[in-house]
Image (cartoon, rainbow, N blue to C red):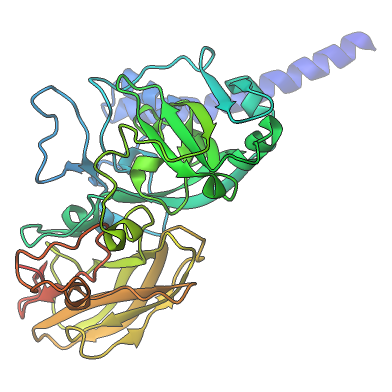
Length: 411
């Protein structure tokens, strides 16, 4: 009986193996028949690849060469013009500055996160410790303060490519702070990464205890090295420099600390400071957008992204006549708090010159300003030299010529 059971199990095991070999063998044989090197076949099995007909790539910020004179690759832009939905693939996520001469190569088995300062119980966590704790997965955008349109920019990748959106997974920071026991007189935290130049940021304790997440995964897999592997801090809605990569230390303190990151990101003008670290509300049309071509008069779906650091997007309006009139667009995706939201509007182009714009409203009722409104607020002339102080969330216009070509409306 035992012999029969063993043989039956062996038969089933061998049958499954042969079935797998059949499918895998056909795939390998097909690849080899098409002239695909065996190494390439192995790569497809190991991680996967996209079609050779899909060519979306990140490009450097126009004003910053990458790699730079030191060989560093950073300030690379997400190709928003090719995006669908709201999730940015990890491989196309924008990358801003690395604080040092290299991207840290960290062994997660050796990495530690320390929480100390004004706490009752200073704690040190290994990666294994963190992954044993309750976790959350949330969709949030990140945007660099330098994400601002200029008349010289040709495409939406150049005007707005320093923002991306992903699903982040990790341990809620409030859980860790509660375990450490934050003292009553504390009011700030200082978060630090493991880069060559220590990237610290001062963050209000109220924000840390609200919705911050200590993340170890992005879009369903471990963080990529450019995005902070093995650990980064997610501070939803705040500008990118607060999203500390390679997170290794959180110190609870009773005052604002002037850190490496904070220097240059504060301003004595309270109006500028109030509009700096929290992003938006902001939106941009990604199709039709600069550098694209309409094939002729007829139906088109105007599509774009909207986001706000203050919460969820409540609505988006689109103008096809340069802001003289506005129509409500449809939200094509869930409106998650502090996340990209996809919008769309059915539109019939008559073949004449026109100007497309979008503006959004967040759940607080704040409306994205036009550049004219921003200039008026700052009491500055609206010309080609106008630069919005602090975070630029002004409306981006796209001009469509009679031949269907699309151009930056700021030019």
